[in-house]
Image 1 (tube, helix red, strand yellow):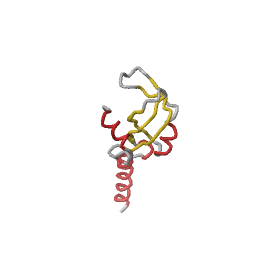
Image 2 (tube, rainbow, N blue to C red):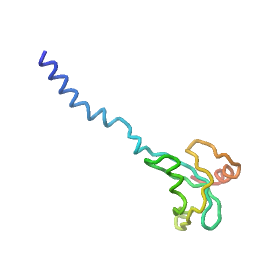
Image 3 (spheres, helix red, strand yellow):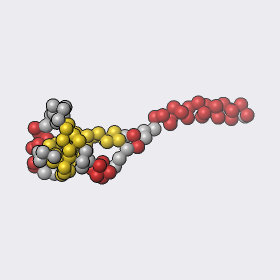
Image 4 (cartoon, rainbow, N blue to C red):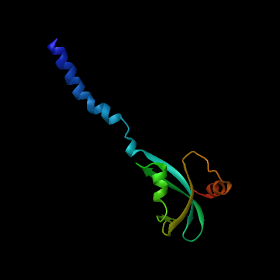
Length: 106
């Protein structure tokens, strides 16, 4: 009886790191967003972002004032206004945002 208890305890100790490693951590989950923005040059764009460890509202509040790069990868412009952010696979509410998204290469 003592041997079974010892064996069970030993197996539990050996397997616990394996089961803990497979549990996804919500704070490190990567969430992909597409956002309809107005930039400092008054142009409107749809830009893709990845957020880790933030709710959607926290993510959206942190965007204004942030610099995003244009398609050339060199020109950086500041985000002036955020119209809407949606998670990847979701649809924008406005026709203008959907039209911009269709023209944007991701």
